[in-house]
Length: 360
Ligand SMILES: *Cc1c(COP(=O)(O)O)cnc(C)c1O
Image (tube, rainbow, N blue to C red; front, top):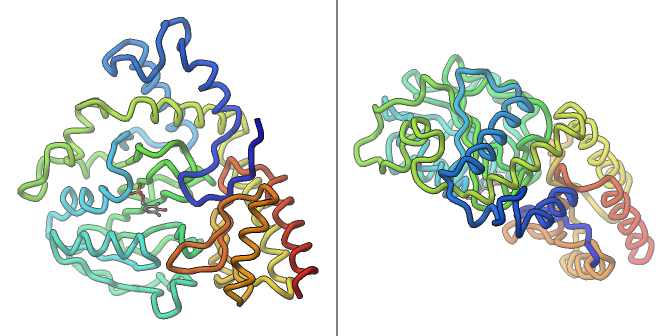
């Protein structure tokens, strides 16, 4: 067996320990004589898997009791619709556009009510986070929406926007559990888990209880009503059982690692290795304004499409996988999520150094 260093933006690297444990339990989960994939989601065994996953997540993120944790399907993209359907009581919401995912969420919201673009960084290819200290928040806005870490462009909010008292809704898909967050600052935090938490097929929604009501837009599907899912503790229908089980293992791994403060320090250390190299490189250049750099997704370019392609190809041959930038941006992108070990980043930087020497 040989494992590569996988820099994919998502689905992405998972902790090796978690994969090994899952492999050990594949045929016979703790003496049940069956795989977690094969058991009823109503069984006692599965009930303890999902309950334990939730309580570990609550502990990791310090989630207050007045927030519900939902494990759902449909990916982050389905939440682009679920959020306006559930939260647009006045039919108005403000969106800050910092990349493609925020833009897609905005476009979806436009189908359900009046969505306002109150700030955007599209003028400079989303290479920065706009100043959000004094935005024209709509008086009757039901919520203010952000994508907190922009997976494609490699930017991250270092301070949350001033929502002037309005409910903040955040897509944290690509920074989920990468550092501590103050849950009380948000009405809704949600993310697809396939970036930093688990396998594709699960989206986690953390939502303040007063936002969960029957007062949703007419025509909202039963499945997309947060109330349906909250009342049933994510078991209204068959949940993504196996994916939730793996997420639970990742939560245990994070606890064992020391929790989110420790992950933050580790992630900062890894990102610094790469950014410090980029800042002095004569060949490679980071594409993001320094203050807004993501700890998770690091895009960079050489300035030449041919050299970029050569780099990606030679890196792959050296066991450094999936470094090609997003198709809309080009260049390279290294996603260095929680499960990417420091050695992976060190190896990448050493490879970049050698490539630079050979190609300059
Ligand atoms: C990947 C990603 C999405 C889309 O996730 P799906 O689960 O594929 O719908 C949305 N937002 C962000 C920030 C992402 O990184």
